[in-house]
Length: 319
Image (cartoon, one colour):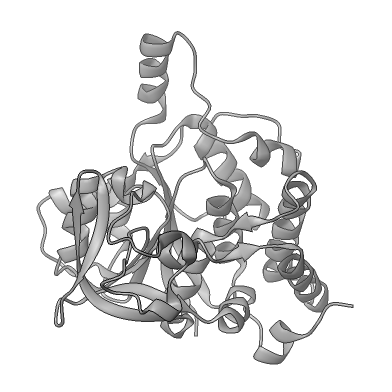
């Protein structure tokens, strides 16, 4: 059965947009809303394009800041408009640069669409979530799966540590540092029935490379004409462009978080409490906290869930 899911994103990095495409077409997802940080008119335009291309015109779209007000601030501070969408987005999909001012306040969209049976996945600084939690209200908000955080040597067994993080207890992490007070509030909020953090100690070991690219391409070709097929074809189209320029591949942070939201067995988890000191994040073992952080993941299960495929389909070698 499909789960009700909201995707909270930014557009500085391709993997947020790729995650949007995957979730929008995934047979296991009922996409209830998309919220954007900070909410520039160019961001709203490219997200709207994706939703319309996949036949989801009715999905509500929210932003942390008012797009028109952001433009006024840009002109006042910079004397020009700030690009908040990477060149890859426009180039990979042949989209003419556009601006769209039609998003509603993100916290209002979250407040209306979240509920006990809804999953919120965040791939951006938790500004929309923080604003929602600052508003009056005590009702249940469902599950939270956030891309961000760090589990160090006090959490991760030696055999599971990435070499680049071995010997570390704390590390800067972009999404949580983008709104640290909001991230800390979300990490302990009882309004979320489940709080999972898909952190860089695992994310930095997950890549979209040529091997995965061929598997996605094959999975798309095997599907009948459908939104699911079209969404995977768009992923392939975007990564064709990316891999031409960077054949070593792309770190796939946000898609891992999305897969963990769809099936928690993609990851291995430890119960913790998050903390921040001198701009760096860490986690302490805290049984009973209700907050979990990822310590490892299962690659084959990740691919299977990401593709919305059976195990056999996901593991087939491309020809």
